[in-house]
Each structure stands twice: as structure tokens, then as C-alpha cells.
Image (cartoon, rainbow, N blue to C red; front, top):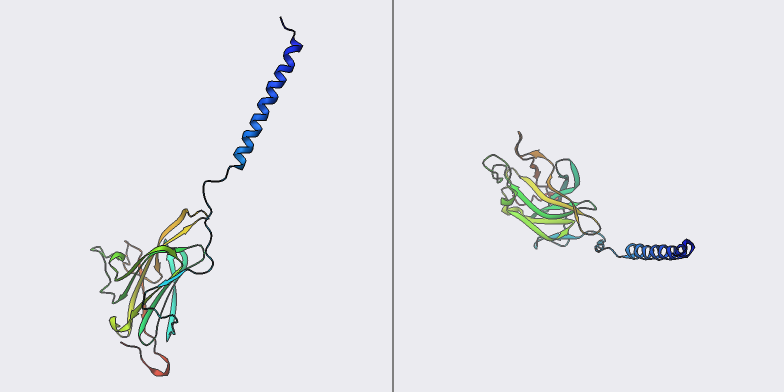
Length: 210
């Protein structure tokens, strides 16, 4: 029978080897890189516009309303204005948000596309864009001569799909957005909204096309 004092060094050696292996494992795990690649943030506005939008817009008049997402979250603005020839409608979102889709209606309230229950149907709006790359700003340019301009005014319903992503590009926010105004269906149903823009008179008393 072996004496106990001979087994003691052997036990200590096994224990020391085990601790060394655990420390190596922890070191490997702690230095293993993340499988997710951080997305490089774009600097400044990433803008877009319909092909007939001029490089510089000189408004005869303009106004802005909040772009509301999920009914209560102010995520940006809808700016509307005109020169002597065109109406311009610009969607812009605050930092941290981007636009995935935009749908726009400009015309009379009676002509606004709705379902049988009276809810707005953005997919049937005449001006619409699916933005392949999420953008921060988009402008629609519409010839005034193509609009009803009832009494020099038009109803505007500006719908959008607004999102936000984290530093890895993962979607963390996605909501429907509308330019703030009057509910299209006042009692229940969709919270879709519209507002009214009356064409501004241009400098020198020149009226825009009506």
C-alpha cells in the first residue's frame, strides 16, 4: 500500500493542470469576435426625389406638418409648397429613422381612395415609392396643371412606412406614418389623416397654375 504523502503531489498536479485548461478556455471565449458586423453610419441626409424635381426649389410659399408614426410618435415632417408650375411634397424623418415606403395622394377629399368601410387605402394612392435603400428624405414633384386645385386648394394625404435600425442593421422600430391633420374616418377605423394646402401666389402677383 502506497503512503498517503505520495498521492498528495499527484493530486496537486492534476488540479493545477485542470485550472490551466479552464483559464485557456475562458481566454479563447473572451477574445472570440462577434458574428455581427457593425454597420457604418451614413453621414448627413440620404435624399431622393422624383425625376422631374429641380435641383433647387424656389417656393412661392410652403408649410410643414409633423409626420406621426404609430399615432403618437413625431418622427419627422411633411413639407408642402409650390412655385408657379409645380407642387412639391417632401417627406423628411428625424435622425435615427428612415423611410421604407411612401404613398401620396393630392386632390379632392371625395377622390381620396378608401375602402368600403371608409378607411384610406394607401396602396391605391397615385404617387408611391418603395425605397430600395432606406432613405431620410424624399420629394414628390407634381405639376399643378394635373391637379384639381378646387378653389386653388388640394387635400394631401401623406402615408409612409418608417423604420429604425440598431448599429448592426437589425430592425428595432417599424410603424405606419401619416402627415398630421384631420382623420379621414372620424369615428373608429383607421387613424389615417389628411391636411389641406392652398397654392401660394408667386412673387409679383403671379398666380400659380390652377
